[in-house]
Image 1: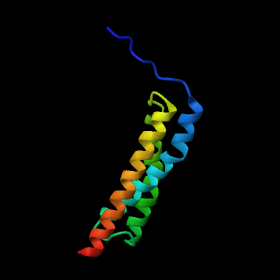
Image 2 (image 1 turned 135 degrees about the horizontal axis):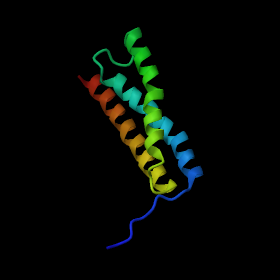
Image 3 (image 1 turned 45 degrees about the horizontal axis):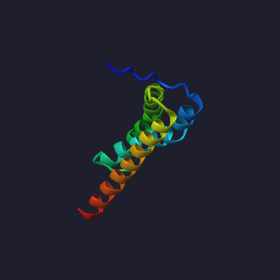
Image 4 (image 1 turned 60 degrees about the horizontal axis):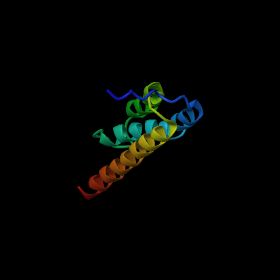
Length: 100
């Protein structure tokens, strides 16, 4: 039976991955939420407040699970890829909303 890999202890690269692409991912998920609501991005005051206050909750969740990556490089790759996917989805939603 192969030996299980342990989680590496490169805290600095993981912390930086959580600080930069992790925070960007929280903002992008919040923007994705705002884009998917019927009112769109310039929505009501309640939607704006909810969109603003969901960012720390999302970032806390991302940071909580972020140290479970096996290496800092994997954290950067996964979080960076998730950011690119979210950004692409936001652009696609805005293009479809303008088209329709």
